[in-house]
Image (tube, rainbow, N blue to C red; front, side, top):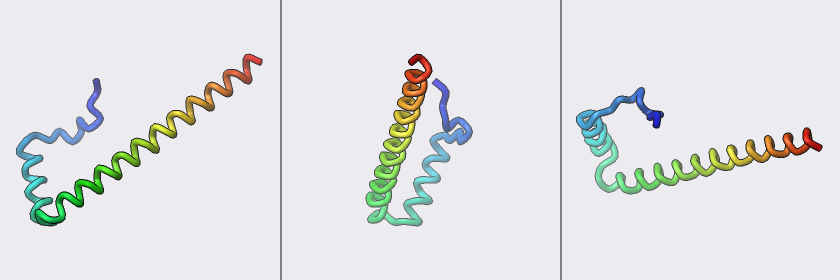
Amino acid sequence: MVNNFAFLDLGTPQLLLILVIVLLLFGGKKLPELSRSLGQSMRELRKGLNESDSEKKKDVGDKERKSVS
């Protein structure tokens, strides 16, 4: 399986540094709210991508049926 985020090449020290910076910027009280909204955004993005893929597959299937008829 190819890692889509291989260009980031983040290790544990880098992730910890990013986490500390985010914690300092937003504070402990805002962090759960921030992560919740990030999760909702990711779900909406995946949902939109899945719908787009299913529409493309449906269009290809319709075109194949028309060419066979």
